[in-house]
Amino acid sequence: MAELFPFGFSAATGAYLSLYVLTLALHVVLMNYVIAGSAVVALATLRRRSAGPSPIADTVRDWLPFSLGAAITAGVAPLLFVQVLYERQFYSANLLLSHRWMAILPVLIAGFYLVYLQKTGWIRQRPAWLRVAVAAGAFACFAFTGYSWTENHLLSIHERDWSRFYASGALLYYRPELIPRLLFAFAAAFPTLSAVVGWQLRRRADAPTTRRLALLAALGLFAAAGAGVLYGETLEAPTRAQVRSPLAFPYLVLAMAGAAAQLAAWVVQWRSQRLRAGWLGVASAGAFLSIVGIAVVREALRLGSLDLAALSAEHARAADAGGAMVFAVALGLNFLLIAYTVFLARRCRAGVVHE
Ligand code: HEM
Image: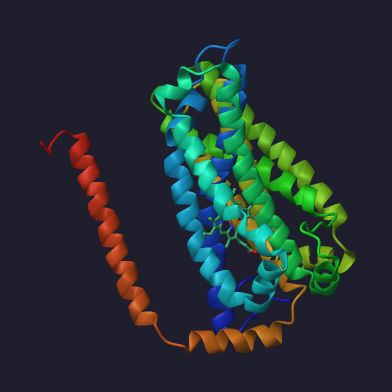
């Protein structure tokens, strides 16, 4: 493609692609908190006997049930758009993976129970091995879910593998890019976690906590860069050329600029040993820009493997199907209900509501 994303597509395709990328980016922010957060909690639980309290792990443990609910809810919007955009590819992969794909539902339910269990007084009284098993189990559930999304995505864009995969009766789909892609997603989750936890602990973080957050972010950024290079090596030449195309390349630069801004913000905070709102703002904005940039590059790789003309006709048909008014009313109502819920919760917290 010779034009910058999302230009150069029909109006309907461009609009669906933009909405898809933006909603996916929101899902990724929350999913990053869950995946990196549950890893941090599992490690802290393992070390608990030798180390003292861990403000980062304690905060994340408290917020995991909420953020998991939010991550799953935020997955619904891109799920709708991915079905409109790539109906045939997405459903074919779902069907080919069959109950292996559907396994993410019971696994996520188990993960939900485990993150709630981690917060109870009951588990705190239990032996260390059980606490570690619960924390590691929660992480394993989310890692499995992330793995399944990657596997489904890769199968959906490699149509030439479908019949062989179906005939083989295999339950797992593997491609060389699977592991580096997963490593990238996992490593890139840590800088987002640091930025969000930075805001959560801004007023109470001491010097060691600030430094630990900075270290998590920096290690995540370097590991993601390494995994990204590895991932690039596994791509076939035409796919790799897609990354350098005008469609995607400016977004790769945006993602790298976001990463550089995050690194700078964390170096400053490491040195000053204090979390500062301005620099947390830079780290958060950098993280969001990196996520959007990578989401577009990811999309460019998929678009390179599909017949765009056939897709455009489908998208125009979907855009003409109507329902925009119902959607707008439902959106407005939902915003009002969310705002009212936040208002009620704040009043309760301020002690205004009495039994
Ligand atoms: C904690 C649970 C979850 C984790 C860790 C997770 C992780 C991921 C990851 C790693 C990807 C990127 C896959 C890739 O590009 O290789 C992804 C994509 C996606 N996720 Fe999630 N996810 C979770 C739950 C959900 C749920 C419950 C939904 C739907 C309600 C959802 C909707 C999506 C969608 C629509 C995509 C894009 C798929 C595509 O473009 O092919 N996710 N998720």
